[in-house]
Length: 420
Ligand SMILES: *Cc1c(COP(=O)(O)O)cnc(C)c1O
Image: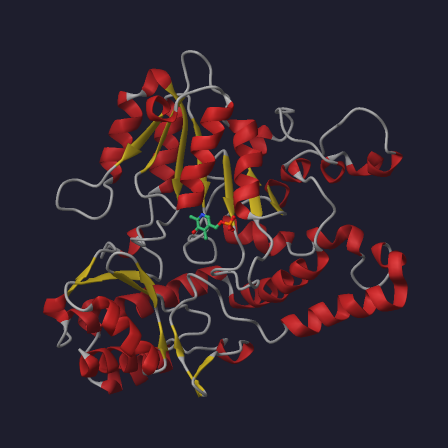
């Protein structure tokens, strides 16, 4: 990839011609001090599609005009609302439609699915996870372990990078799985680590977990809408994600859950609620919970229509753009950012900890600044550039294929050189 790049701005213009930012004008671009900014924080909060207001306004109007009848009438009856984006959601995850559902929030969904899928026995009770997982994942695992009366330190095995390295090696994860084969109940990792930007080899890890009879689950907060996923074919048992990062569904947006088809009819133990009951009988209000088949059977409550309207607006853009096309464009954007950083005047002050292999990352690059990282981060803001700072010394820079351009990357690196 690198050979096609050069350091001058004509390269950015040529790339822009070849891989145009076709969907940028569908989004509001934020301002800093009255000037449109270069927004590289789509990994944290995706930008607002302009169509969100229209879709939410339609449901507010429906509510105003129809009241309770809005559940059954109008263009998009609320009773069915959680299903309208199912097709696009399934494509983003590489899943069947019956395997996905949008509901609750990420951490809530993680607890719901751990309740079903983490079923420790006297012999098989251990959990393998990554060291430095997102805090909410750590807390969820720790508290689930305690719910079962087990001791986290004796139950959760964290895998660390090797001495002097920043990311995990697939071989080390597979080795840990094999070494703990007899006692292993669950393997649970992020699809893309939020801090390092490393994308894990989900397919190999899932296969290896399966071989030793362990359940395999993923937190896809930083993976969905970012990298190519094939959860069904990869035989992942369960996964959860949020929709406000790469999926642009707004702050606190509705979460998602995946349950593999093979578990659809197993009647797994779970937390039940009326919305997860068999749809044909939901309103009979009868005694005795009978779960709907597939992921829908984990729903608890009636769907949050207004947040789902925001999600639907974004899903329509993904449907139009095609995740394969976005991934293709993303790889060029991020490789270009990497090339410019490594050849910049600040090259000696930085270490990119995100893997350089495009198969092991999405669009985010995490960069350690050896000196003055915090000041640089602040100066970038003064120069209308929004990146994100993670203690102790990492700046995450995320060009998103839906709305970021090659020119923005060029201008970002020029600014970084000027203020360094
Ligand atoms: C963003 C993020 C979360 C956030 O969890 P919520 O329940 O949506 O607040 C959880 N896990 C990971 C890996 C994340 O990146």
